[in-house]
Amino acid sequence: MAALIAWGALSNAAEIKTNWIWSLPDYLPPPRVPIDNPMSETRFQLGRKLFYDTRLSGNGKESCASCHVQALAFTDGRKVAVGATGETTPRNSPSIANAAWRATLTWANPAMVTLERQMEGPLFGEAPIEMGVNDNNRKEILARFASDADYRHDFALAFPNEAEPISFGNIIKAIAVFERGVVSASSKYDLYLQGKATLTPEETRGKDLFFGEKAECHHCHGSVNFDDQFYHATTREIETPFHNTGLYDIDGKGGYPAPNRGVFESSGAPDDMGKFRAPSLRNIAVTGPYMHDGSVATLEEVIDIYAAGGRDVASGPLKGDGRYNAHKSELIVPIDLNSQEKSDIIAFLKTLTDDELLHAPRFSNPWAEKRKAGIDSKGSQAN
Image (cartoon, rainbow, N blue to C red; front, side, top):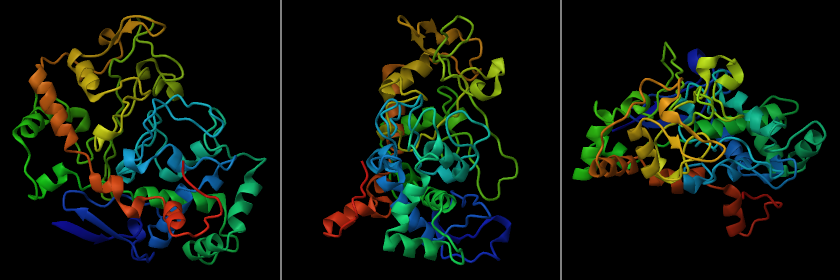
């Protein structure tokens, strides 16, 4: 049975009144919410509009949804993301679903711990350029929203008692509220946990392998969010592990190709080479290609790499045998899996797909709805 939990913002929930209700399974506790950005339906709906609005980009052609497509569980199907200028980023676009329960955001930055802070990267970043907002176009972009009567109303409602509610600070807050509200908890596996669905024999065998000591997938993906950086409103000790999974060894000394060298990029510590956050496996069947750089095309290839204890790149500029990477996690070891067992694990992973998330009107593009209704959206649309 789902628990309906009204939640404010951390310790001052009694002081900040919102109209927000978390509708979650009993095994999924409400997430932690920043004190200065409480959940509310008005902010969620404003954030949803902004998330899909191309007017938020420097060139007026890109939106957050350009790299986070609902039908792909809010990923983009590309190896790596492409920004407003056509410049590629070095990383694969992660899903925003259940981001509210992640202790750190992005692939390899231990300091990136809030959605509000994370938003500054794609908005204002210059290397690479994603949304393309800069000092030269900030006023122009804000003017696009200030000239829209609906937006003036929405911002005033979401941020009452502010003289100038249309600001980048409030844009970031609203989008962060929308992202926190994108919850994935209606997969077949969720229904199974609630006694509403039955797994097939193949899926059951895969589940037992996944959580068992043979395949050992659960060591990095054992939380209710199928990752290992899961935290929530009452978490006391937050763990933020990062892992080198032996994808590369380009120099025979454990090297990963720049600029995708994991936590090493920020810490400079040799042992951090190639360490990345283990992503959630929820909706994994629809979020390929895989790994931090999108270099693995299929789930079958992913399973083969882990069964081998790493990846041997046989030729080319990235040549090297990651199975012997000096910095590889001790959790990544060869696993003797036959073809049936690999198939069973993949069958189980497919039960983590949440079709409701992929099609829910609540998370969909509101500008598309307006166009269907014949209402002028002033040119705003998602790619």
